[in-house]
Image (tube, rainbow, N blue to C red; front, side, top):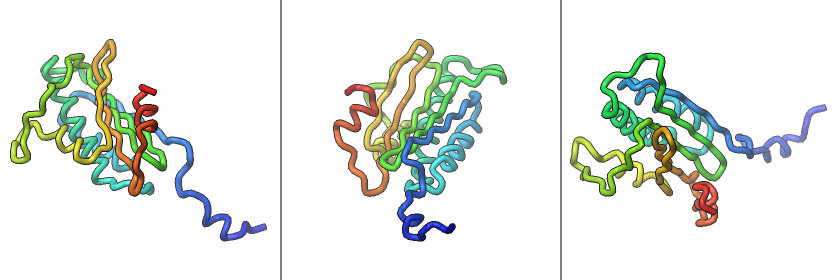
Length: 165
């Protein structure tokens, strides 16, 4: 028996539950390329701009690679201290990039729009509904929350996602 086409058309093209993907990276320059590709692939077929999500993954991963390199100029090939997690729902995409450096991010961003360095977090802030940092025993994670097109996240949603509700 064939289902009614109207019933099929009413189904969402993506699952209602969040879909999460995780990537572990070595401290190498091509980690940024890998993170960008990973993020774009994770939102494929969903109502997000894959270029925008890939751009934010690229900026945050660049910062993570630089932080890890500042700690140790060389890392063994078997260690993957940079983690990228992307959770995608019908209302938001939550990008989290972790690195082993426990030092806080600078309080002030120094990169202007024409600067060659230091613009990454400014770019993230222009595209994300929220950005925050969490610190753990083995480093920090920078989070960026991107609202789905046409979605305005409530303060309660932001607090719940950030774990501050």
